[in-house]
Image (cartoon, rainbow, N blue to C red):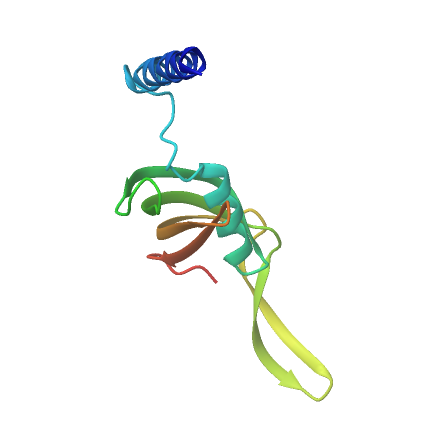
Length: 139
């Protein structure tokens, strides 16, 4: 009985030693990516879904990102700069006469605009929930 207990203790000590060396190997040096960083692709997808239908996202850059929560319960704030473009030309109504509506062009297809966005992202059930606030009005 005592031999089994010693073997179990030795096995447990070896596992602890191995796991602590793995943790120190993972945390020593610079990690390639922050595990609590929100991927730019996720932020771009969310921005594309919130834009009015005539706009499409051409580029989105994460200028700054910080986790104000914890590693277990991250709350990541991001500052983004992006370029959006019109997917179709836009027009404004000039006049209506009966069944006819007269319009004039406002912006051509492909017209670009720079947008600035601040977002707060919370990880829930393995997915990022993102609340964004545009600092540049589009649409």
